[in-house]
Image (cartoon, rainbow, N blue to C red):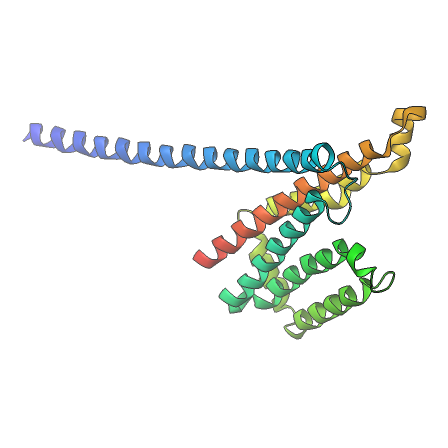
Length: 222
């Protein structure tokens, strides 16, 4: 009888160890996957800048690889939240608000192209999108804040916020001309400032896009 008890206990321990090993493997693989994505993002930013400056020899204009990639990342971010609005109707007001926020940024990044219509014309579609999104969210009252809280409670929301702060704060600080003039004094080269600023922006846009996709996938499964 004791042998059976010991055997049963031993079997349970083996099952628990096996389950723990599988869980550990999943965690390690998940972390490895995240590391690979981070490496891919870093390589993408570096390769884009190398193509623009080494191979194309331009100065990061609207038609540069870097600028185009920034637009792609913004489009992915915006589309992810509009997709959330479609897949999760209970979160649609907040999702449309966030998606519209990235859409306005997308419009702003296209200012160079829109200037061909008239100088500063990007402001009109941007304002229209902003007011429409705010009005839509306001229709749902306080529920929109609750929906936004649900979105911000997802595992990748902090990564999204990190990307936004890199974009809106750090890249702006690193892109200040006065800082680079103080650093390089009479050897000031504007391209150096542009490379640092644009690489930081693209890195931030990539992080935002990645986090947006992760949030969309998480909410789809929830």
